Image (cartoon, rainbow, N blue to C red):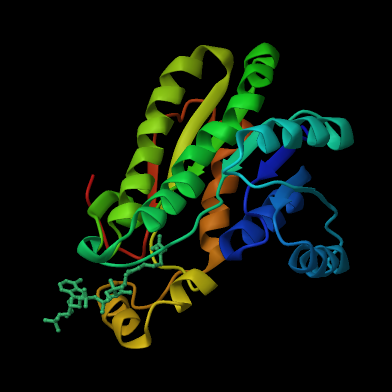
Length: 246
Ligand code: CAA
């Protein structure tokens, strides 16, 4: 196996942490950004306890200049980014007729514009080296829409539009670009949905339960493997059967 350097944005979150663990377990060097110093330090200590050293850079993914600087720091500390997972994401759920501009732009900036900010500084290096893996973490709700998530669904659907364009532009450079669209996974983000609403959603999942972060990380790791070189522009839906559109 070739050891690569992987950047997972939002690595301190539920799904991000699982992806970091999985990629580190495969022998890759792992990096992530963070915003809150104290939270990041506690997270770093927990990962170190499990023998995982993470290169951590303070950077807000909504800030293009900070993302350029982050790519530079990671390259200096652990080598150029060869695997990128655009995972950072937030929700600001409310029905559209009550949504304010801030709730709209916060979600579009963090979930979609960040894909530009983080990918742009690393894509040229991937093209020059003729190898790269880019994975967008989208959502079931980008595929089917969701009551109360016009902002989030728009951003998540946009992420796959980004994937399929980038996949075409970079196929000849040994770079694959794919999307993973998780359904409802038992993370803080999903547990923040009011319990009675969440119970109704779980009732719509044929497998009968929320997903686990490692079940998403497993698919991301698969997409970053050498053997997955012919798979590009795909959208892997992992949602316990809640949405089976194709
Ligand atoms: N379909 C139809 N009607 C619905 C509905 C749905 N799916 N969900 C709610 N409603 C109805 C309610 O029954 C209620 O109807 P009545 O007024 O007739 O009683 C009405 O909508 C409530 O509407 P409000 O505008 O008053 O909404 P609210 O302020 O009470 O809150 C909400 C609405 C914030 C959207 C809340 O329902 C909610 O949190 N929903 C869950 C949204 C969700 O799934 N978020 C996912 C977060 S996790 C994530 O995003 C990760 C991922 O990728 C999967």
